[in-house]
Image 1 (cartoon, each protein chain N blue to C red):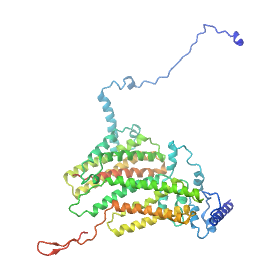
Image 2: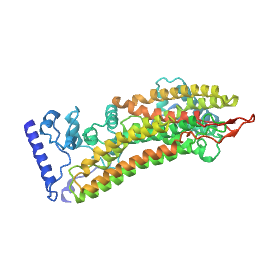
Image 3: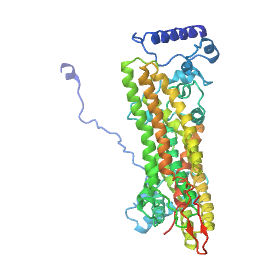
Image 4: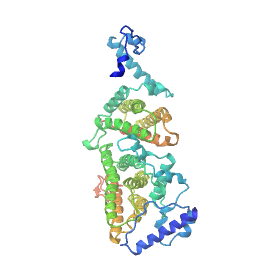
Length: 217
Length: 306
């Protein structure tokens, strides 16, 4: 390399500078990692989050807490308890009875997935699991209705009990639909809201029908 | 500009007449004829070619027709591809349902309402509603029919929901598939002016099932005459939608094949309706005079079950 013969680099020029690696700011919890906390704290934190969401469903105000921190514990507990309570119906043959455990489970979860896909395909901006979370938590009024129905059926099984059950299930069905619509409707494009609300109505109608037609042994 | 469009239409109509006169001539089939406003079209109307009224437009703007050519460009593994099948607004879905329930004679459902924007929302949710309506109505109807009997114990019959779902969804997807395959096969032999895409056929079938939802609710009435009148009435309405859609697609074919195709379409539709009525709804009790039972005080009592 002839041209470089004239270039000389002094050996004692120090190379200096600063290399900074950006480190995320330590929030107060990171100093005390959740790995070391007592198990009771971990469980209570999640339980409190679930409980807060139940309260949000009981008094549906538009709040972003339900949407932002989704979890599927509440829907799982509700779905399992509803499916368990729908067992024990009477039937002459297995073909004529009420829904089996697996059928209730599949209807609730598959129905929620289909409704979520439907709202996303129509152009909704809500995320998949947030929508599942809302639809699952809003099954709670219907689970309460199931408990009431079973209690009423313990007392009597006549026409009056049917009318009571009809009123209770109808009211809870309305509550569920309104609660979930209140949370989900805003994320839809404005001229397609009815297209998104109708499947939710159908979903809760089917669950209400299963609850209302439950006949004990 | 309008005048040149009218002239184009006149030329096209002449070409169609030429083809009808000489079926063996090779012509290029034009799938999407140009739309022109209604008042000019009526002057060019040939008597007896009312099926060509498929070109009549509604008051939708022409923009939707122009944009139709730019749809469905996303690859099929992306979410956006499937979003193109749900590109409908509430009023469009309601319009399509209205068009399926009140078929206007001479107007083609596909050309008039779908207009290159077939959606999957309508067929899917109409089928879902129909499944649950049939199951719930059947259950209610059986309950009311057997209500007075002392040995009757109500059962929810939940198994029938699965059966209803399998039947309705199989009908709504497999019959359009078979029909589309058949039309494609005939298209390779005979140049048809009108051809439909698979999704358009699914769309027509899905929306034509809508009339069965109120029919199923009315089937709760436990009178045989009422039920059969409803069967005939709903079959006429939805069958006419299907016939007016598919007759232009097979009209140019061999006469016997065309008639056989349309007859098969109607037969399958009737089979679905009658089959659902027979399976999900128990027959209302007939007035059979019961055997004479001697009562304990010597007089004979004839009981009639109603």
